[in-house]
Structure formats: C-alpha cells, structure tokens
Length: 271
Ligand code: CO
Image 1 (tube, protein in one colour):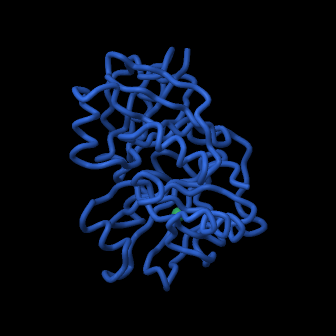
Image 2: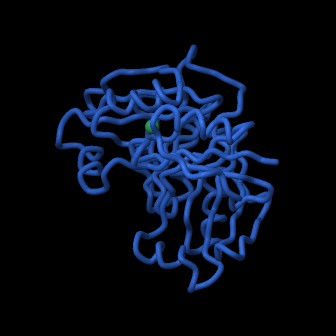
C-alpha cells in the first residue's frame, strides 16, 4: 500500500550548485547521489525526516527532464509516494483505466519506480517507489505540507482517493485569500488541495493561466520561526518577517524559489 510521501523531485541546472543550498545551508544529509544513464540524469536524494528532496540534473539534452528544464526552468517536477509493492500498485491503476507512463516498474534513484501520467492526476506528475532494503528510513516528521492547485475540487478529491488512497480529513476556508484548502494526510505530511472560492480569486486567475499543478513549495514546521529566520538571514538569504499564515494559528516566512533552486521553502510555526 501507499503509506507516505517518499520525496519531491525538482529539476536543476547543476546538482553541485543546488547542494550548496540544500546540503550546506539547509543542513540536509545526502542519502543517494548517482547518474542514472538510461534516464540521462544525475539524481541526488537528501533526507528530511521521513521524506526526501530529489535533485535531478539532466546529463544530456534529449530527455524529458532536459526538455522540462528548458521550458519550465528550475521547479518542482514530481511528487513520489512510498509503497511496499510498486508493481501491484501499477497493476491496480492500469486495471482501473488510469493513464500511466510506466505500466511496469523500472530502476530509479529511489528503488523500483513507476510514473503515473499527469493527465491522470490533475496536472501533477506522480511517481511511486519501492525503495531497496537498507534505504534511508526515518520516523521524524519531514515536510509539514505540500500544495496542489485544482480547478475542480470535487473531481480532484475523488481522483486522489481512487488513485493514491488519500482522503480529505479537514477543510479550511480562507476567505481573505479566496481559497478553500482540503487537507489530505500522507504519513506525517499533509497534501493540500487548494481551490479558488470564486472566479474573482487571484488563484482562479493563476489556474486559468497555468492550469492545475503542484506548487513548487515544501512547508517545514519549525519551533521558533524568529530564530530560524535570523539564522538564514545570517547565511545571506532574504526572508520576509514572519506573518500570519493561511493555516489557523500559524506564522510563516518563506525562502523564495529563486533562492532555493526552484523549490520555495516555507517555514511554519504553529502556536
Ligand atoms: Co523521483
């Protein structure tokens, strides 16, 4: 079964440059770093509690990842879920008529892997992975939440439940931002389905322009956001002063995607 988020994958121009941020500034530990020849990428996994961040650097120009980098720039590429039986999950999805990129598992950075087509997941590229024995395991909280923006909330909710087994357990209306958040727990992380409350919401405009997609953002819970912001400012990063977040009783500040190789890092403290 699918039990938690394994990693988010981001595409970068240079894994070495990105390591200067994720390893040296954020302090994450590299668990895997190798070139996967048949995919034309150098992949690096960095552990963050029970989750990981995957850096993907194209090593040649004729791959999907290279074309993605050319057209979209450095940004989130996919969300990967951990399962003990990737072959069984792909068979289940295929039998249900879900469009897949991989109908059978292949070797990837995270173990035996397979991708669903983003058309099947409201614009989100989803990977499933069964890691090899001895792979990194942690029971610490990793990401606090990820966000995916959807136009048709009811349909997206149905899709995530049917395909990945996640369900909305809590809904939050954020009137002043014109959005509804549906929280789906996956391990210790929430995946937020975010949808506009009406056609005038700024989010509605963004969906019209960009389509449904995953936000290139991970939120990480911190105990003392003022100290964290001061720490990263001391390392030369620019962060706004912590302010009330969209989630109840939260304060947030964000390391922008521009400073974080395409993946915004939201720091969130719950009071
Ligand atoms: Co991946």
